[in-house]
Image 1 (cartoon, helix red, strand yellow):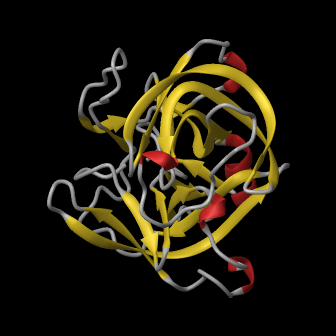
Image 2: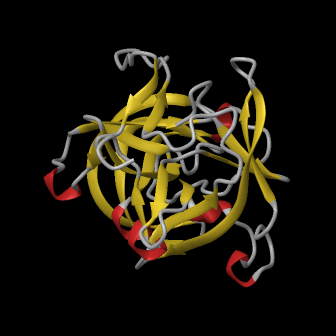
Amino acid sequence: MFRSSCATIFCHEATCSAGFQVRSREDNTLYLLTAGHCARNDVENGTGDRGRPWFTHMPRNGYGSHWIGTWWRSVNNLDDGDGGIITVVNQSGWAAGFPIVYVHNSSSPGKDTTLNESFAIASEGNWSTLDTNDWLCKTGGVDWTDCGRYDGPDILAVGGVLHAVGVFDTMRSCQGDSGGPILGSSRGWGLLVGGFDLTDTVIWSSSGGIVDESQCVRHTVVTTLERPMDALNVRLVTVNNP
């Protein structure tokens, strides 16, 4: 999403990854979509993160941090999925309003991806067309870009909340990658919301803290875009509908 680096976003001690850019279906307001569990406390009733500024964090290419705006609304439940939106107030310093995602070179053997700071999103992916063993990629602010095989749908407890999710084997992700975009074939497919290693227990989904190898996993848990975007009443920013 960011032209300068695969960006983490943060507010005080909370750290997540930038997802997709979306717009209100009512008034076309621009928002940044990320995981809903990144919001702390009751943002909808004016406590917690509501009104606090969120920032990008792009140190790898020397671009520093940029203020985005304030958290607006979030959902995090079985029916609506795991998604939240940050109002874009400050558009300077990053590619605000453009339907692009940053794809980094993958460091995983056999899963090379080509560096692309402006991977264009043409449409929303249709999960009904996704077959087992199809490959998609994630891009996160902590572990950059990695790809994995779709293992199928499941219902898992993510951060103590049951969610209908898609599971991707051998797609590496780390704590802090939450909210990062799942992409493939110029489509936006979902948001990264958690991960696990050897069991079906999601071992992380919250954010914050110093990320090290012990917080990285090989199976990534994804929420679709359709349910949280419907609940938040937003649409995906795409090439044909910016």
